Image (cartoon, rainbow, N blue to C red):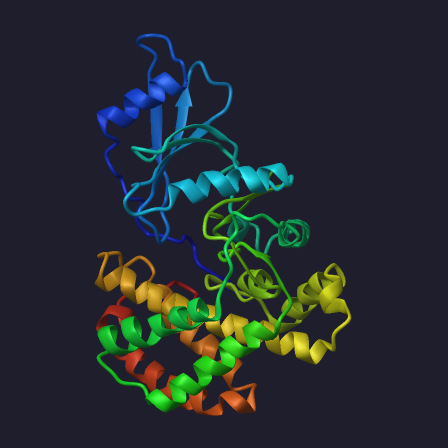
Length: 349
């Protein structure tokens, strides 16, 4: 099993504006002259930035989230924080917020991500907690959670062709082959029972501190395929489990999910794998877009390992044989790309 040493080689040291600092001081109700220490945290694929706050008058640390209102759906973040919190899910409590400026003071759920306990003695306990919380999350029903439409699933797959193949590699896919595979993957997702899905339920959005799970980055949750989040967790874009372990944990999720437990395992497993393929293709497109459009190259090291996993997965299904052949050509071109050659992980296979 292989895991990255960190999901962003550089912590983005964004300067906190004086207005944000003044807002924090007021929200914390600090006495005059009391200082606050701001620790910049690593960031993922969004426009938000995060800081851990420490002050002499606060017994516990807090998290400051700066989320540009023009670029992030802050209203939905607040809505879903309340919805999931009311359902007993371990999401951060919102201590204070300023929607107009995009300032949020949040409960600190800890600094240790699930990624950091993989491969340790705490792995089984952490994964059990993550799967049990996922079953609880899947049962949430609320009008604030939109539908994950077939059109949206298809558009996400198009990110791979547009941003990675065409704009990053300057290559063209066989359009008929890709559109056929796209249709199969979307159809597979549409056949599944539907439930609430987090949509980014992976080792960097799950915290595990003092035997307690924490869930973050939940604002894009939708009502979609029941296997979406377990595919995100077990076929993680940032960590590779061996197949025996994937089957073990998938079987646990199935046992805890009655609508799946009544179905043939071969059917559930194909749905699971097809969603993993959809997610990994989408992720590669997003990583290329981050590099080309947003000037963030931090996710380039993920691309070649993801392509290798896609080759393994698509080779297992006869109906995806043509897509597998296309991906082999894409992978050959990617291996020669200087931006990907220069960015590799130590120990990554």
